[in-house]
Picture: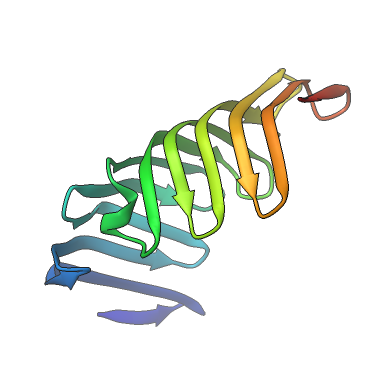
Length: 171
């Protein structure tokens, strides 16, 4: 359902339930999506395929407040020629022009086609809204793709928009 009111699109779509199969695993999706001008609402997005799950809830726009959670205990259930696990959660707050993004992501024994990564740990708190410091810490071990091999990659960042540093260590 939708309408134009004062030259602004207002619409809402309720996906009560989509069911099917993905790579021989049961697939389910349900959510309610809405738009009102430049404000987008995502209410209770729940995607499941086998043991993999993604949930998203909140809104995007001038005053965003969106949270997400990702649980993929076995990547092969979603992607062909892949293995490993990927778990994460995060949020996006504030305006889309100057967001405040937080995320934690953990990957183990990842292989996607020819790309391999033994472990991935990412923690970020990036705030473009204010002069508050942001933090970025990413550690990846045993990266391999083709002839390229990196035993350990560390990225560390801190500071605010006007004054920040990024340090990379590769061994």
